[in-house]
Figure 1 (cartoon, rainbow, N blue to C red):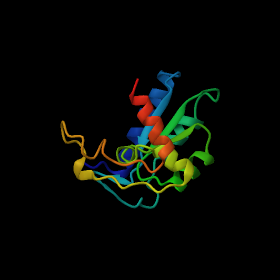
Figure 2 (figure 1 turned 90 degrees about the horizontal axis):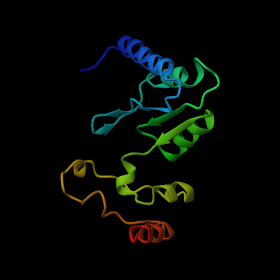
Figure 3 (figure 1 turned 135 degrees about the vertical axis):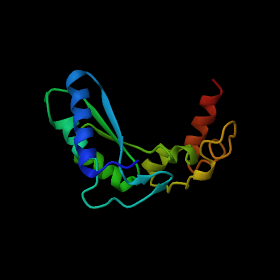
Figure 4 (figure 1 turned 90 degrees about the vertical axis):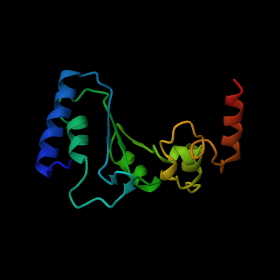
Length: 151
């Protein structure tokens, strides 16, 4: 069921303000951007973003807070860096890419391209294919991973 744009803004503005005000030590808000549609990615339409939620969560209310906003959905390394450098207390999550890039952090740090994930393998019970069978591009990260699994 799709909400109208007015309903989305009004409903989620109220929800985020309520959480922020009722639970002042609530540590973070995680909100996927609307660039994700079901199992596919799509271009963001003009004026369609969660910026209003970031504004409410980070800039309204008590100015002495340590709240964090976690954005997700359709980010690339350059857009994630732009997002996190543009505002304090903003993080970007790469959920789906962790399945196909066991060394995701090393890839980001070293500029190594991401291995594409396979959506058709998501959510298949009791099957490791698509979750634990991807190669490491960074050999140092692979070694750390192997050593950590020994303990």
